[in-house]
Length: 259
Image: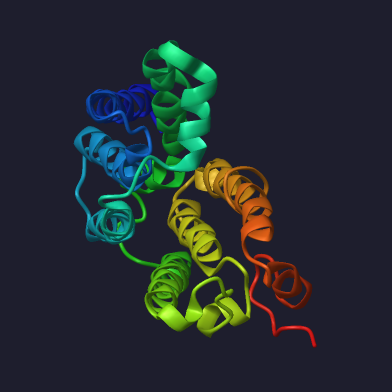
């Protein structure tokens, strides 16, 4: 991957996130960054696409798969969060930051996520810039399968949870049906699998193995930082049955429940 292409992708994501930040300042709602997260990857991908010297069917396939992931995630979060107040994570940051939060959020929230998205998108950049292989091979087949499985868990888990919550009889209860019976976070698991799928495309290109830093970073963030580790303490406090759910259900990788 050329330095110029990588910097162009970083600039595209940063510019996009800056525009989203301006909207957040006007709305006093930094949580719109969650909706923009998936779209930031599309900004990086198009910067890589413009930098590429070829347009093989393999590159087009990677671009299409990325759009399926990014647009689905953005639309899901837009539909889920529409009309809701600012997420409590950002409210706490706003309270701690006081009158400076509007400016500090550009660095601590929007540009930080821009850099993370740029780093995670490394395998997409490798795949979109590579001139070889021009045709699909075994690792590409693995990439397609992983992206498909990841999208199934991610989209299926989101749909199952939304359906569970719509039933008034489930108010205050823990969703342990469908994918949620086998993993406490099927959407996060699916997200990680999708990015290992994109890495399979990158690994099929000469010298593309270094881009494993992308899915590795995404997996660590989902499990140890902004995903499971951040969400579960709140769930244990607010849902009476969540501790029992933890005792019987795998935290991340799908596995038959215990007991």
